[in-house]
Image (cartoon, rainbow, N blue to C red; front, side, top):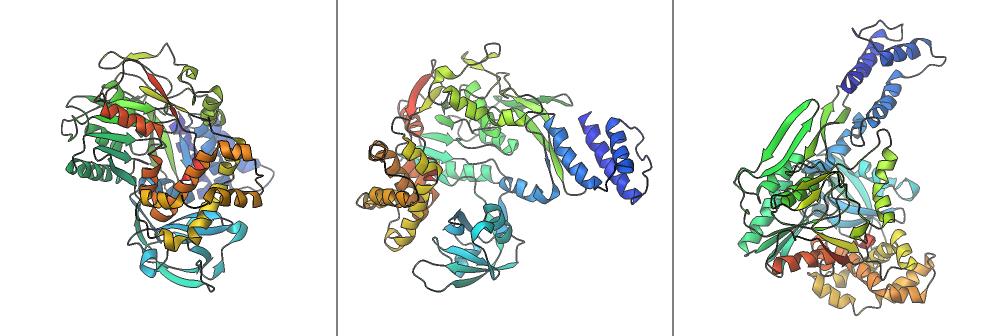
Length: 542
């Protein structure tokens, strides 16, 4: 019925265009209340109006009544919406943040257009095509619009560089920039392969296999797949990745919907890592394709899931594009893990706000801090291959639960994070000391240097100038968290994501627990869930 309504609305729009402002002839063979209303409004409404605008406003409202993941994408937004699922985009080859109403260049991508002309990390973009681009106009969306563009086109940038009095002009020819899904892959203790998968895009499987091949060449004895923060992407990529670890005939997932017959996906036995010890890390933002991997590894008793309960998205969307360039992503099926559970969390149709607030409510219920705060649905009980009990109806519950530790968190630290004062201080510090910091090539060497600097005192003075009052008891209590955040930010600013993640993982309790499980030789689900504590979140460390 819903598909018919969508088609009918598009048909009405076409009919309106045919009429050229005159009274509409009924071009649809079968009409309904929606058709009648649209004709009625067009022919009789008191004011002139754009039926195209009405259609654009109506489409998302119809889909909202179905489920939280069926969405309408206007033509102007389609390219940006699909960008994260592609392997590249056309741009100038930088990563940046907006700070003090100015574009700050964090990273210049190797062999990209910006590196070729001499741009450097720490540069500030203040002019774009001879137009001043600072102040309120300088938003992330607007910066992306102005810096991205078709391959082969030119953009002129005016750069303010630390230590230089005059602006530097760069003429940059846009080119294809690779969009990586895996920016952190390395061996922990020279034997445990750690790979952080940020999304499931076109190139993710190739990047994943390259990382695993390097691990294997260096004598890797077990793998940690970090899916925390991974909101999903292409389901087919998740199937390929899961296949690498499963035996022939192991079920990966199956999908089924009212108009989509049951389709079962099995491992084909060609995986290169079927015997490799495996741990998968999850949290409340691991969703969709991430949950396919976590679910199949858990249900097949193939590895250990460590972290926190996943998001709970068990709905499959299929894209449909209209002739005007707009599109819908329509939910066509549910996916089920091998034990038969659908891990889609409950939702009320038409109440997207309530659905979006679910993670906040989990936090308020104490779910991030205590496994006992998680109430599983006892009516949705399933069994894994070895007979362990798992639950449907709301995400994948890990085999080993990692709680969030707030022991050293204070209101001072929370404000420093939420107001991005730590990130601001670190960017200024990195710019002012880039020459000496650039002598370091590894996080541990840089860390030894940073520990000799009075960075905590400098930050407190900086934050006070920004309106964050000194509170000595709070500062001393949160000292460890503040210093770690400072060091992590500077390491990222100078050395990039990989070295940043390597440093973070030295005190990330979830990662440390994964290493412990691998070291013990028990990289399989524990019969009784275990709980460990995680350090307080340092959200501005990236």
